[in-house]
Length: 276
Image 1 (cartoon, rainbow, N blue to C red):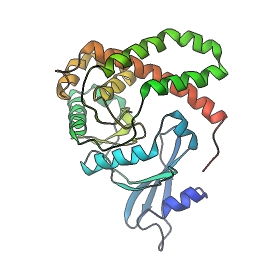
Image 2: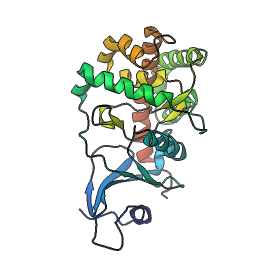
Image 3: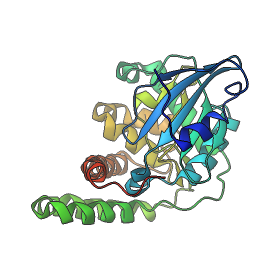
Image 4: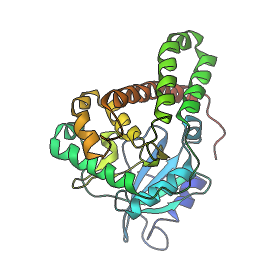
């Protein structure tokens, strides 16, 4: 396919090893991503990923600088793809392409895969957390609701009870006293590559936060995994500080946030902020 002809693309391509000064690179679209355009770029120096960011991602809760810092920390520990370049303005990210197979949803039903993921999360959560801007889920929840209310007041009336429940859960979570750590924040199977242990990609919603949030996000996406909740808590070294009811309640918050996120994505695409 032809490469996109934009300033962000040209600047990102200049950060790809071997992409300039020689044979033209091969460019292929990669599947996945709802607020980005992602490309595999092959040169004589290897295979790389260029991700171009839609500006409305910031309005959906993404902090590109926080993402780059936490992705870099995870990559240094062997838990993420190598980060080669991150635009300070948040327009693009360049990483090394991972040749291992991406996970399928069915992999999460395999005990060995699930245990490998839990061990990877335990390693991630044990890393020294760098100083990054805090992510306030409660504020994000309120922002989603406020923006949706402008377009669909009836929908917000229907959301009053689940939003109140989510506020209460987040308040109780803040009182739990678990030490904040690096979390990935978006544990869909498509963000897991390879096995033994898997590496994690797409760190847009990474943060320094309660480690229980990673498991809650996972169970929000795959409710059937709540049956393995006790084992997940154990393998992530959280069974002494978190309970199954806490995990289930926090998963409910993430289900609500995911629902609101998709509604906001539709609105953001209709009314995007100015492009970079």
